[in-house]
Amino acid sequence: MLVSAKEMLEKAKAGHYAVGQFNINNLEWTKAILLTAQENNSPVILGVSEGAGKYMAGYKTVVGMVNGMLEELNITVPVALHLDHGSYDACYKCIEAGFSSVMFDGSHYPIKENVAKTKELVAVCKEKGLSLEAEVGAIGGEEDGVVGMGECADPDECKAIADLGVTMLAAGIGNIHGKYPENWAGLSFETLDAIQQKTGDMPLVLHGGTGIPDDMIKKAISLGVAKINVNTECQLVFAEATRKYIEEGKDLVGKGFDPRKVLAPGFEAIKAKVKEKMEIFGSIDKA
Image 1 (cartoon, rainbow, N blue to C red):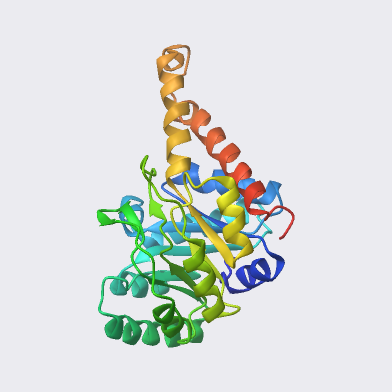
Image 2 (image 1 turned 30 degrees about the vertical axis):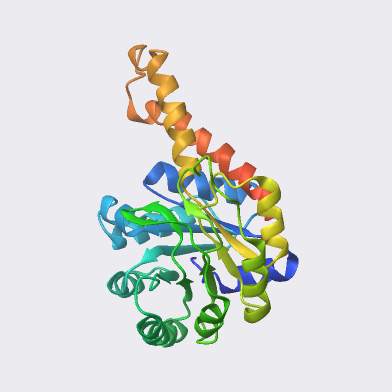
């Protein structure tokens, strides 16, 4: 059964580890992440961007697939199904479809409007037992066509949003989505520390987990980050494993063209990558 991310993230923050949000794109992705979480006794958050939701034929399809897998694969670790970077409308669609957690990305609205819309969603999510993530200060890089430069959030704005009663807060600390450029300045731990001091026990979220050095990840966790989003890294290893299979001509041998065989190396690559991340985040055996 899907759960809200609230309890798993509060436990993570108190225990100084982080829960990974791994974005899903299809059945292979979902199954690989769920099995890895179960095998490693780790809580997990399945992230769904609006683009991925559309690709998978809508949010109800995603909910049906995930709920089916939880039952059929006997998944007993805590699993949250979370809308990633949701618009105001998408949040309502996911709440209706049966997601257990949503992110309202109001970072492009003026702060007043971001506050008003977040406040309204806090009430709706509270009533339905869902967790709600809010964002302050755009996260850089490109995600589903949204491009930002990786600026740092204003700690006072973070406090204003946190005080509305959201479950977790994504704040820009120089992190970006996708691959990091050569000249990336690194995470601003000063900003993170200032935000943490103003938001107290609120679990903080680090977007753009791909390519941030492990020591920086660990330092961020020590400063209150309890949820780390991973997407690009899984995509890269999936593509690499699939390319290798085709380049070695394995699809031309016997029934090697069967999609289940074509996608198997990528599936295994995602499992290995998710496990590696769970080790770094410290969530193994925390279910």
